[in-house]
Length: 125
Image (tube, rainbow, N blue to C red; front, side, top):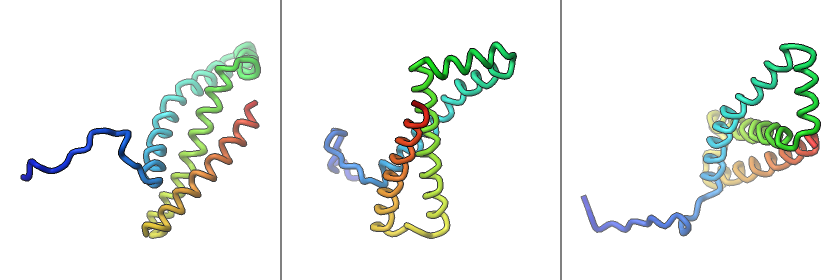
């Protein structure tokens, strides 16, 4: 083993390719969805418990900024995760495996996800 190999531990100097960023964001949005489901399940359970619970959830989602932000975050994560998942399905079928087409697919993934996230923001607010 060669002990004289260069080691770069300064993360700020490492240039991440767009394909790596898309992949990392896909994993991060999966974690956000997993954690966000706790809030969604709580609201769903409360809304099904009684008419008062339903009214309280509706009122909270209409008037509470934090609740709207959480809903926007979870639905935005879902939109990004869905778009990246579809891209991965196409890759599993043998498309976008070359370097340049993979970069274009990753950029398209980001653009489509940003458009969907903005539409979700308009819908929530």
